[in-house]
Amino acid sequence: METRTEEWLRQSDYDLETAEIMYQSGRQIYAVFMCHLAIEKALKGLLYDRLREIPPKSHSLVLLMTKLEERPPEYLGKVIVKLSEASIPTRYPDDLAKVQRDYSADVVRELLDRSREVVVWIKKQLSP
Image (cartoon, rainbow, N blue to C red; front, side):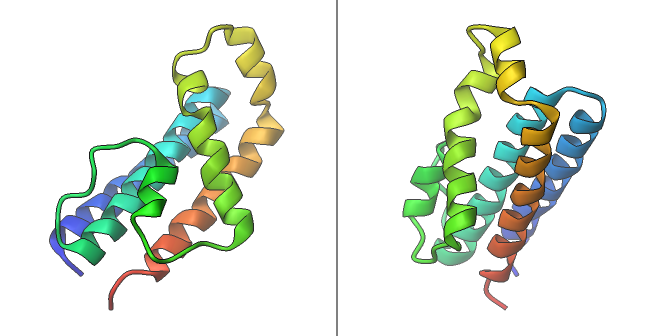
């Protein structure tokens, strides 16, 4: 595996750990953002692995997925879409109380667990 790919994946793992810490501390919307970031970095690692070029400078998980031939199982694809849709509202909420209600501990626990599964799936797609 290429060093740049490994670096993207190290950062992805770090961000997933940070998401868990944010979740445990009750900072749910930051946990959601870190899940997004972890998947974004894992996807960029996979894109580098496939294309051998710097991945697009985009934060859209959906856009990054369109650059790949591989497709995750449907339930993981839905997580990717959900996190893409959560990106702006969790970083720049119009109404903090509403966003905190929308992203309750139960909702975020599910997103965090599924995000881990997405990253595992991405790693399985890497070249040997």
